Image (cartoon, rainbow, N blue to C red):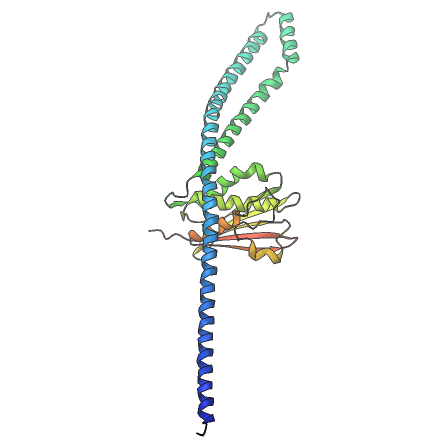
Length: 314
């Protein structure tokens, strides 16, 4: 009976075990890498789905906003024109009344009874008050039409298609235009304080940036329980333009702070939020080569900061 070489058998088994372990390790690594690729592909697909949904929604909103702006613009134009004509008429009316009074008062042999009747009619119809107040009313009405024109311009800027070519624009003017558009929604919740620094124009899509500003301001107002403040500031920091939007609202709990940019994540009631606003805003700022960051303390408020690269001027 041949003698068994136990040492050689052990070495063969050891080598076979090492090969099997290496194969298992390689398979595990391959599975892990495949899983990572699948996760990344899923995240890209989820982001693309959110983008597509938002783009479809924005296209409808853009068409609606452009139509509304056009419909508002037409009546506003003739109302403003009519008001300016009324100002001219009021000025003529005032001069005529004053001339009549001068004639009556300057007539040395004027009929005392007529003068008395004129004064009585003037008092009875509050003519002094009317002549003073009508110009204030007309001026306020004209200011109202100019306000409507500003809102229409904001709607047009907001509705501008995202396919527009990039252009140089003023971030400060973009902020002011967007605030006019959203003022009616925010004014009952917060007072807005501006600290807009001297900053250069940047290259980008003002309609898209306007959308980001609108989302952040509306979110800030929604986070304020009763009535608070929203602070908006811009400044140049090295080679970046920074814009901050800070509120003194309820803040964001730390356990969900990392989820706020996830598509469809929202803490708002059903029907009051799609969960797309911050996700899309984050994507827009990234496409502009910038960053959107957030700091928040529950019960104290939240501050979003947008950092955009300074455009090199030729």
